[in-house]
Image 1 (cartoon, rainbow, N blue to C red):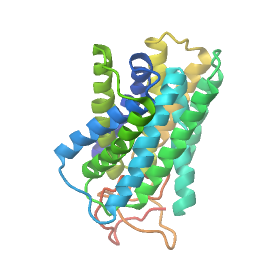
Image 2: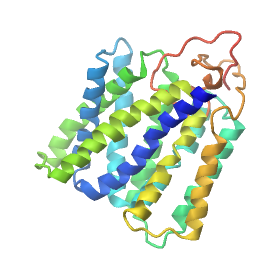
Image 3: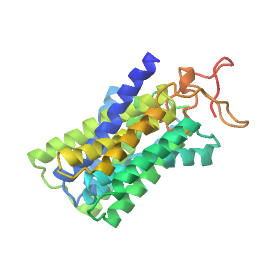
Image 4: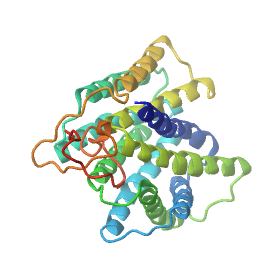
Length: 328
């Protein structure tokens, strides 16, 4: 239990960094360069992780890395950049809180793995909270920005569920690096063609790019997918609700957005949703007939592929034994 708590704390670094990323992108990066913004986020982070773990893809992982890089990196980063520039920080991060429920449903549809009741309930409670924060805003919401944010949720959720099916790759650091590099290599020529050469960045923009690439990408993605290897996927997905919580708090404290009583209630509901998915909350159910079977290092995390929003990026866990409970 103590080890699970430590992994939960490490994993929480990711959604907090991503929640702050909305504010950094909106306040310090140019609004008219989403392709360059996404490319300069993905490629430096991918190359850094690749330097820390210098391994090349083998066999089917060339194609898998390209597809997952297109979904989880190229498509997601561009859509997220547009949403961050078009929406207030609290709104953009709130919409992204739909990701746990979307991943629950996609994993259920694609893998046949039923989500645990506690994780489904936690996702619904958390989504109710972020919905309350969204609906109580007085300012109008940009429809294009809202559409970009919703599309980012769908694209990334699909990529994460697919990655959860492909658990035969090497360690998480290598597979994350491959996807970031693949996505960055797709984005670079697209940015050059559609947005022209990048403008010389200012000092503030350089600092913002450093945060976006190193903290909100290299560090955050490593923490996130490491958590997916050691914790139940439903728990990791619900920790992702700290993303909108961070965005709303930054929007109110730093950007001066008003936080009314109903939004406070929404924040409490978000925290309640996270608590429902804490490690060790529910026992591991069994795998239905025909479901692929693999297990992570502890019995509490054996259902990371098919349960809830399972999306481990290709990390290879040890094979399950008869003594280890199987996933739903």
